[in-house]
Image (cartoon, rainbow, N blue to C red; front, top):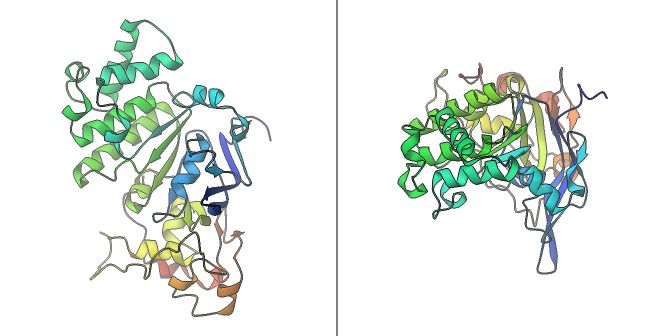
Length: 344
């Protein structure tokens, strides 16, 4: 594959195990996906699905050696990240690849001003004069919509609102013009109005910087706004993968359909939401066969669902993969009429 057509990031058969008390738990099981320059790929699933662990593996931010990778490859611009030393990874984090965490108050240093924290990141990867750092910091705060950026340079995190702190986190992530941006639940702790503003900031930033984005979320509305492709995860595995239009309009896995049915819709009459019954399984004691079968209405107690782990396979046209034994029986009408509004 030539360099032009090569994906920016290729994750292949990635597994993550956590070792504790003499035992081992497989939190991510042979996950594969890739992302190209300028593209937004969403990792979606309930808590414990493995989406954040998969993304944190890219930057090697897991608690090693408690965490390990029994299998897999993570290639960024053709370079194998899992083989790099901690010193080499420090040169990549915040430079070539940046991350926006979901809780700014635990990520920002309460003892330093906004100017000092953004400036430190700039100087770490691109040492320059204090005057140029200050100028770049003001540009970033303006870019993410911080009001009165001159004044906010001297502010401490506790002096900002939740939405402003998240904007600062986005500014820090964009400081060194990364090729890849990882956004881990970037709107979770914000109210609906502020969420919409942050979504607009992220969309504008992506358009201006052409950075590829991995969006980690359980918010399907956010996916409809920002994503090009979707990776649906359940119990540490990828259960469906496809472009955003296909996933929203023709889902071919019962879990994806359950997520869609639990979403409030503005384009259809709904008397009540339809939650997925039951709870996600414990990764320590996964059920045999398909991990979703105890919660799956489509399984109907069929033996194959209870005994055989379904492999990801091609369905329909284009790149649309699903891990369901009986995906052919799932008509697109089961996902509900129409697509979720708001996709760009």
